[in-house]
Image: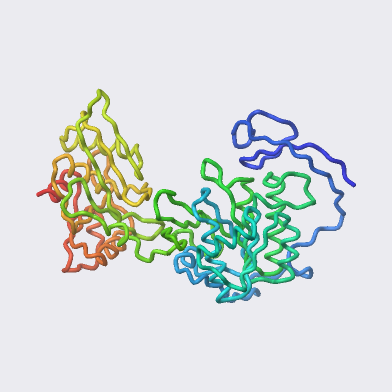
Length: 457
């Protein structure tokens, strides 16, 4: 039996220290070191064996045969797009997101689809009882005999059941509630999370069973636990969105089997999560035609163009200091835009309160949306209506020039599907367009002054 010693782990980054310190020496966070008692075990002098076949030998790189991966489809087109075509057998995936955003709902719906099309699915929950899972399943109209649920926090027992059943998919909800008896620490501690993830990694690789782990997030939005957790898994997904809005976005932060540029968009309805194959139509469905202060822009969610409406409200301030408020848009970029409009275009905004909003609860941080936001502000300031079939795109510089943006043809093609006919884009992008479609009208601009003249002339 090994000796026990006291070690301090940082709950933010997982750094290890032999003594307590107020500030973590690795990440710099205060009051994150927690004491844990670990036991030293004697290691044999024989080299440890790896995961999988115990007789594995080195192979020359040209002799390795490349075979196509037989991915498992979730039947959700949005999820398959994010994963690169489906679930890879033997992959360990990590799903993170804010509390109540719909992580468990999403995985329960995926489990139902996989159980109906592929085989048995084992859903292990350490946060809900079997009765609670049954109530959630009834609300989602899920009732599959091949979907097996277990409410337990002992990871060793869960893996024993999975080894007996050999399911097509294993879901762990969540990794912070699991524990193993070999580690004398509370569930959710750094050592428990690290050891449980390591055992799940070995299990899914040896049995070739895809495994999905739900991970809690910190107040900064990062997955709780050691940073090593994201390095151990094959795929890291984030489920984002505002709880007061219905739209949810699934992003891929890390993917060893596909691109990290794709995103999936869902809507939270009474029956659960519903995928949106055409989110632009939903975001523009209630747009009014006779209101000033509204414009349409196209921003990239990964590599996916999405049309969204931006609104502005400009009123005379009642105080000495004007107020600037941005919902879904970067406040610093808004302040820069107002300064450019006042300096380069001559609009008086120093005595105005300016409020901007991105419809649908989406968060837009792409510089390509600067010009459309500036047009929406001027539209409300001058009480002039932007043409309803017009899309404005471009990045605005401090000198008032309009700079080029990426994937311009892809954005225009997406807007054409929804009936938009007029486009104001940067002059640099206008020279790059190869396909001249006579059904639409595209104008290139070099400066923000030229863009304002075209929109409001």
